[in-house]
Length: 366
Image (cartoon, rainbow, N blue to C red):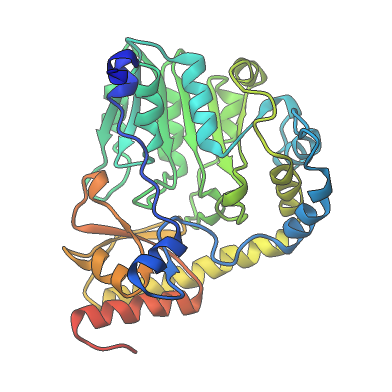
């Protein structure tokens, strides 16, 4: 039976998202114990101890369905952000909310404009609904070419995706640039501002995307507990938008899409500001050290406002690091074959990376 023939053509033509192998499997394959994973932009400090305790306390209740409206998390987050509870939608990671937006607004003949290279799920959710991905190349500095993105908007455009800081390049959009772009965007286009790495942003002219939710009803800001809050394994993301926009997206959401342990973990993590501050500080200090050490090795490092750096490494570096037990992300799939993306780790993980790079260059370890 030719099952491909039976599938929707736009689904069969999709290239699935390719996650990395589990670290234990790589250790087994390569025969290297205690590999260091710097590939997935996870928080190297792990989750908040309060989040772990909250999950442990909730374990005996996993035979019950979770709260389908995430009432307690919704109330706490709404208060923290200064929005109404009905302006929030929760998902299994913020990428599920991208899919909900696609289900709600996209069909064949529609277009979605987004920067490229950027988050791999933008073209996937677009094509998954039979719509047309419109990828606009980043500029020479690996930043959003907002002028080109504005020109790419047509009467068929339904969604525009902005990723700030951008994954995999790390560049963020400044306040004036974001304001000018959103102000000029047609009212009948949904603007999606993906701020998965929001907590790490250090630039002084940090954009206030949430302000646009009130100023422009067709705007949704996406954030997540996967990165700075250290809950990637629990898959908790959320969108903030006008209540009418959230209400439409909620119609496409499955009941109980957020699991019970994730809900209680996110609520506890939200209250642990000390852990969040420690995580951001670890990243800021680690980023500065990595940039200095990588620069000393003669490697080009793109500016980054996230928890990772894009590095021009040349051929063979990804595999060479892998063989030395250091896992980074190759960028060939994003059209950047000479680059790798490196997550900022702990001090010892960062040193392990740099030592491996020195060994690859024949300089010996530190």
